[in-house]
Image (tube, rainbow, N blue to C red; front, side, top):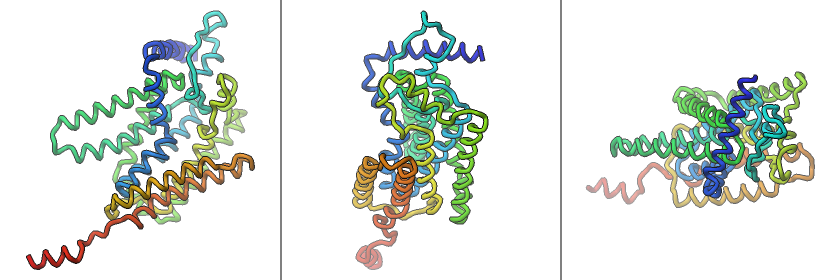
Length: 351
């Protein structure tokens, strides 16, 4: 433990160094951190993919959901501190030499720090997208593939810098998030896994979701039985965050589990879509944009004054309905018929 404490102490100085060097680029780093927030990705960028390709959206959704579930489970098991509260709780510093790190509204996340959810989810998301791009751009030569990979790792670098700059994560938490993200990407993009899940009946897929929920509940209650408060990270965030209004319930592990379960249940009901009709972009994109806007409005009107049960149930149903809509309603209403128009067929016959 002394060695680990020494490591974290060194990493605090790394954060201070990053905050000093990149202070002029705070607005840029804030934009990066916000853009690659798992919730923002899930509510904006990922649904746009549903308007372009149902098959790609299904693949991306499966990868991101399983990665976020893995992130939530590992966070609960490792139960590591975030820099902004570890610095104030540790005995590695005395009251005379304890440094102070900069924090703002992006800093105060009430969940354990390891692994970084931003980096783990973004690694998987970008891995799926860039894998598709590599396949389509591979015909243009090796330079295009190298360029894509440079952009991929550069993006992960700037996400890491942004998370360290705002004191959200230690360096090792960022690196571990990237490593786990790559591992989950490889697993989730395996055709065997996707085919296996697709072949299962709807009831069996729902059963898998129930098993994951039971695993989450088991972790929650095992901690309670061991005398550990599962909400300890929330209390630490409240204790050391400079402004309590920075804290958001949507960044807690419990809410993440609710959000993920609603979306994963929708995917289980529909099933991974390996083949789908091409979409009419002129219809699908406006439809997806309208659904995204409606989802944001519905989230803004989440009932917060009727207790935790109503709050979580409303959120669960919201994520279930919209994920189901992107998987079912968009291809049903905006899917193109694979057959050629009658006039085109007659012309081809005459020729």
